[in-house]
Length: 372
Ligand SMILES: *Cc1c(COP(=O)(O)O)cnc(C)c1O
Image 1 (cartoon, rainbow, N blue to C red):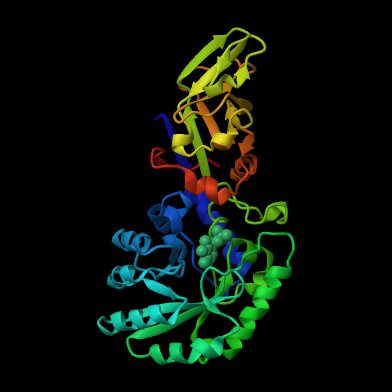
Image 2: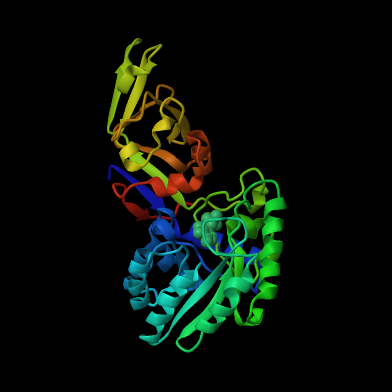
């Protein structure tokens, strides 16, 4: 294989157990598997976590939910973002749980429920994220109508909010959102005991397990990303669940003055040994890593020289003896004692681990592998 992503089921399950323990026995777990399981493969993630008895799974689109159903997932699947009217019928057909942010959608969902053997929904309350949910200050405007519609074949299962700043060092925004959410819950026209109450993503669960409520919705932590960089203690970090690797395809000794890559932005100062590696931004490797990123070869760090091409990078392996075609190059993950974390790459690329993981393209096959 030219280049691939290794996904580690032991690490995924270990991270699930760790965050579930943190949340406490009362909280159910809804692993978020949107964007194809943050790039690891949603079906694979669901299958791997199934034996640990998650309550259900969270997705972002009806299409994602439908694919999980077709793959044989029978647990609840919650679609965690507002969907256009055109998508509701497919959601009903696959018995997905809708999240509701407005009365029009709820009316449509109720109509579909009356033609089916039963549908359910979770109501979102906007406490500051601002992209979805009913306003926490205006419960009187929507509460009674929601209650009126949630009868017969339409079941009101849950109520939730989403934190916008649980990853940041300052706790104030999260505490404020939690208080708004709590106030809103107290004013709902139904008993809190009849609803599954949830709020916490990975960062919130790790930092404020007291906000775990009835269920947590972890995503990035399961996949090995640090959900609160610089805030979590080292013992709280997740295990690395993903490695990105490729094989050296060509090795050449080059004289001083040789240039490499588009724009010839790197010039060899000495006689150097360059290894060409068949992976590039067409695989989702961020182009900004050119001339600054690193890789691991035979357990040692090497530099990416020149710009990253669509299909190739070049690494300077002058310091490592006898590198030859077929040797494994690690862009993310462990090799011997060394490790390049997804958070390290994200920081270098000026983004977050989420974007790095979801950016890897289908050209990289996902391969199950244990590497501990
Ligand atoms: C993506 C998402 C999560 C998971 O967030 P992480 O930071 O990856 O843990 C939780 N809840 C909702 C509504 C989401 O969209």
